[in-house]
Image (cartoon, rainbow over all chains, first blue to last red; front, side):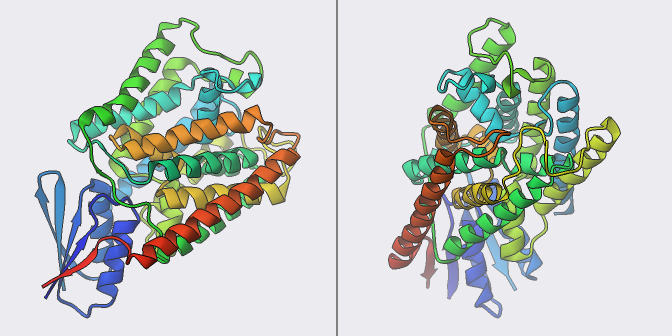
Length: 70
Length: 361
């Protein structure tokens, strides 16, 4: 099962809050977060790195797919 | 990651340094920058209110929007988006402005006032932190203003375009706008210095995502010090600068463009803090995002301008003499409105399961 969080169109801190709720309940695995503004990309990345997850960012047009794994 | 944090610190530090410089060259004391005060002055400059001492089209604001627009365009971050509860945003901003004008400053000026020795700012900042806490309570319960979607680029260009036209008119020297002959509106640095200082902060804040509210919010929510770095850099550099220029005058009474009514300093900023936390960022951040093409943030800025006009047309704003009774009632009404929006918004989204958390197999 792959968790996808669609945070497109949301301003901070909502993308970060949605991501936090998802990964706080997971011991590990992978989560995909979709965001569409650079501030959200950076803030979600920072949260995940601080919490010990690995983040891979892929840009698709004007959107970003953050692949978060641990 | 470390570079980004450095950039946030640099943004705060440069803003603090330029603020001291702007005051030295003519801006009102402890008001090198104040997004609330400057939008109020612009509101007066455009004739939306008739308070003669606070009318001036502040080039700092024009520069910030222009700087953010150019920086976003050059880095391909400019994008026209909007449609996330624009009307709610307008009235949250409208109400936030009344709270900030009862305190007499936005979060940036609260820190600049503290850096100048105005201890009333401590009361305001405590109110601000409480307000952010209340906003976080609603966010944790699922409050959301909903998604924005991509719009035709023309939507995003209107606000920066108008800003650039206003800048041109200001630079032409033609006396188109209202301008105070006495009072805070008559105190300003030379136009080119103000405009340049605005552009510098606009570019830096666009690149670093500097946000005063974000700093407090992210620390409470995630124990994340990233944006708070900017908050403290602003305080430390402005404090050091004020010591050098002799502008540090510690005390509660006789502070410039301020009053010492603690209750209303606290409640005004608590109202402002709650409302802008629900809006997602401090007034400065809203200006920058408006320059980046976010039309919801443009609506927010227009809400600030309208709120300032209303506050001065109906005698709600504070002055060094204190807070008018009408202003006190306006803050109470504003708190009821903002808390209502927070509760209702959280309830509705909780009922519909919020937005975006989907699981795919």
